[in-house]
Amino acid sequence: MVKIDMDRTSQIAFIKLTDEQKKKFVESILNNIEGIKKAGNLEGINPTTKITKNICYRKDEVVSPSNREDLLKNAKGNSNGAFSVPKIVE
Image (cartoon, rainbow, N blue to C red; front, side, top):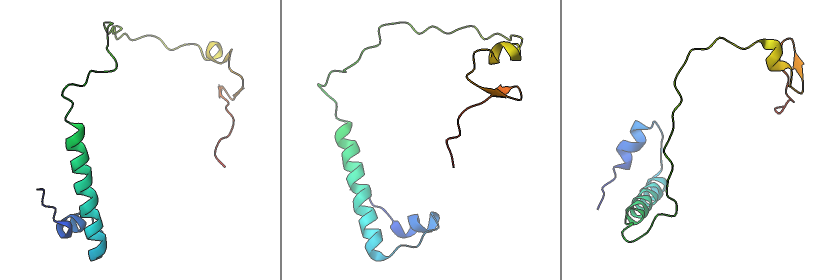
């Protein structure tokens, strides 16, 4: 059985918990630990995917930067020499 010291844990985390909250947290942590133990028992289970290709890495090379006009040529929009994108945050 795992022993969890919620007084010390809450002190380290700088949070104040009631006795009821500490009890719920301990139960939740113990449930998570049990789930992890069950998930770790994979004996007799075949993997659903298999990597069959070799991983190819490209050589790391220093190259000169591209021309800004060439990069912006196919952009939907640009402004002051930079890509222009729709605003997504109000």
